[in-house]
Image (cartoon, rainbow, N blue to C red; front, side, top):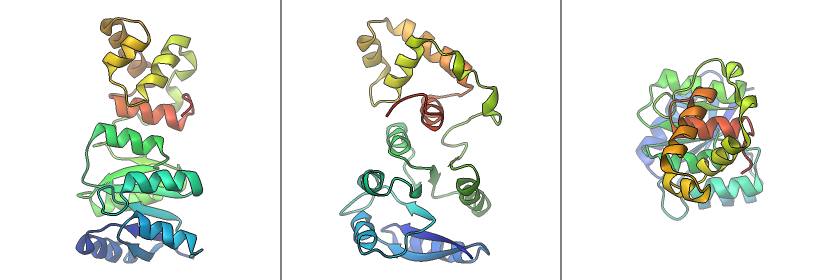
Length: 209
C-alpha cells in the first residue's frame, strides 16, 4: 500500500508539479491538493482520509502555514507535517519546529533529497536539511545529560522568541556570560547555530514547550 501525501500550497503550478513528482515515486501518492490552511481544516473536519505526510507551505492567503500547524497541534498532534517553503528565516523555523513540524524544506530542494526527506520522516520522525541546521550524525555522543541547571534555564529561554539580550536580562547575567552559555551548549549538543540547538532540545524533550 502506498504512503499518502496531502499538499497545501496556494501556488497552483508548483503544487501540480510537486504532485506529479510525488506520484512518480513508487511508494507514494498524493490524495489531495489544497490551497490554504482553511481548506485543510474543512477537509479534516469532514472526516476525509488523513495523509501519512502533510506538505505545508507557509505563506498562504486565508490561513497561512503557521496558523495551520498551530491548529494541527491542537486537533491532530500526531499528524506528520513537513514545511515546504521559500522562507529561510530563523524565527519562522524555530516557531514551526516548536509547533510540531517534522521537517523544514526549501522549495528548490533536489528531488533526490526530497524523497530522502519523506523517507526520513517515516524512519526517524524528522528531517531537516543542511541549509536549515547542521548537526552531527551521531546524536548519542552528545552530552546533554551533563547540562547544568542554569544551562537548562538558558536553553528554555533560547527556545523562545526572545533575543539573547532579553535572555541575559531575564537571567540577570551579562551578555558575555550568555555568550558563554551559548557556546558551551553548542559544544555539548554538537550543534552549530540556534536553530540546531532548538531542534535538538525539542527532539530530545530537554525543554518543556
